[in-house]
Image (cartoon, rainbow, N blue to C red; front, side, top):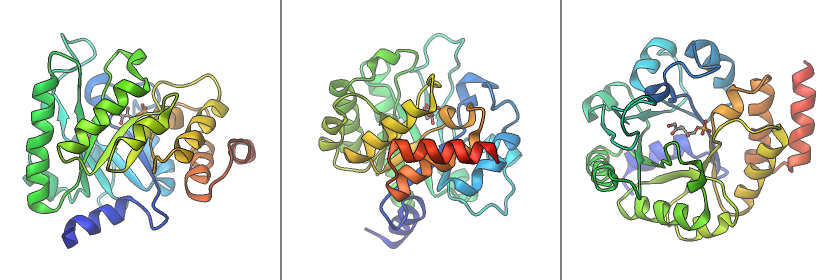
Length: 262
Ligand code: 5RP
């Protein structure tokens, strides 16, 4: 692997082989999502605990100061909205010159496998990988499910992850599911887990993050279950302990309960 690519991946994936990416890109199709209405206010207290931020160029420029040294994964796909015809009909929204100008460490793009736009999104991924490889910039593929949350099961997610890896993604983001080991086993590049909509309890998040890590995920790209929580700083530190300190779900709950009182 060339030095630039290896260096960028090393910024993202820590020396223990694990990572906590903080996605705050949701507005690119959801608009001012709950608790992300003013991105700067959401991001600032959490940034010290994130290994990287997953963000669009607009929110990066407007809401993160340029002296930030946390690596940036730039969300470069979009062009659809919650109220439009089809969330899967995404294109590439940000050119490679802009990615380099913004000093991004990686690019992120969604693929919509099994939809009418499967081929378009997979060819977009391939083109992005070609551009990224030219300049040593890794691509993280997001196995998107749109509004169809029931798609989050091992057979479908394993298919999506494998295809994304085959097309050249250096990291794949998917959802945790039952039998998650099947997803990881079939994917020859590192897998990170998204959180999905907010769960009823924090403990549910600690349990699935812990289970996913045991089954081979290298970390998370997990947003709403951190910043929509009533105590986001406690939440991110508890999840960080599972990822980087091998904390059990019970230990993570203890960390959350202690920090939230401070
Ligand atoms: C939004 C995304 C998010 O980055 C991803 O879904 C992770 O966020 P969350 O944990 O809130 O699901 O790709 O399009």
